[in-house]
Length: 180
Image 1 (cartoon, rainbow, N blue to C red):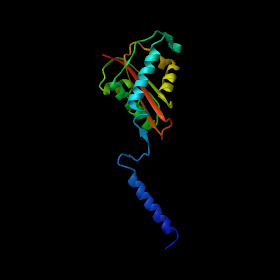
Image 2: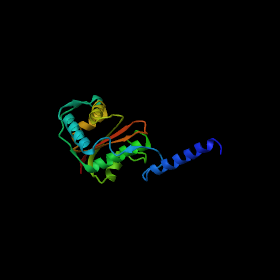
Image 3: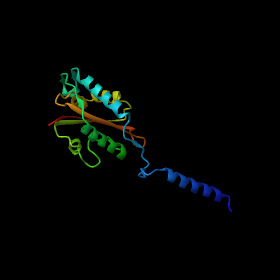
Image 4: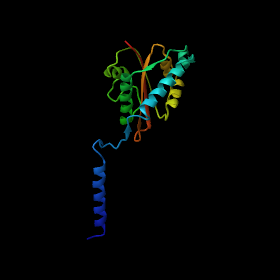
């Protein structure tokens, strides 16, 4: 027996043990993706509160000008479903765009979730670690601010998905809409 034989047996044994511990849900790409960055109910309530707080006062959104205070928005589970699907896609595929990895736009995702709308918009962000930080970032961006302040929107759904293996650790999607 050569001195390297026990080392080879040990490495082979460890490989077998590690393979057995991977679990059935591992798709082999070694990505660790969480369905939510935070407790969903807490995150949902915080997002609604922060968006409604922002909408409760007049605001300037850069090149889009001044917006009067707007009415409160409420949560919609279909919008959450569409937002979550997009955040999941960005985290898993490691990209950041309003266009999904399948080439679809936010309007397509909203319709696929079963939501019929008369007006809709999407805000995305990546890298923020709290709901407050992402809402602040959106309010500091002219176009995202305009979407938040849009008085035609009455419902929202938002999602944050985390991924340790992607460039950004968190991927946020906020959908704002008015049902038909």
